[in-house]
Image (tube, rainbow, N blue to C red; front, side):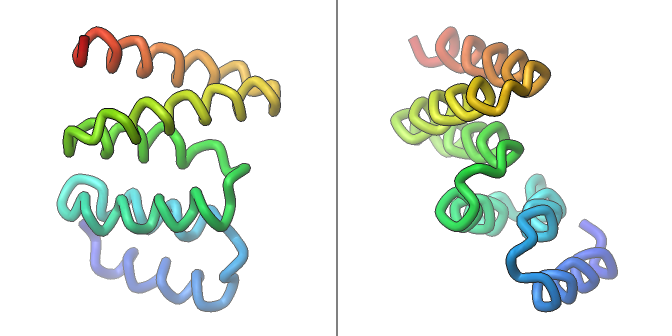
Length: 107
């Protein structure tokens, strides 16, 4: 976790509150060291920017890690739908693979 980068991203969020990338980038800074903080930021993105596709992969993984399998499943499936709607083949393949791994792990 890089404190300088975190401070800069928080400043960017203040300056551009409607830019989802800044909040996503901040969540990624917290992802490994403060997963609860990262998840809070990702959940905010899911509500405020439901069309921001990168959020779904990371949020689903964090739900999976905290054993909230119902929300993980829902988040993977919503992300898969959105990737198909956006015709984003790379994201679709990544989400399918992650979802398949998730299903194998929880079944």
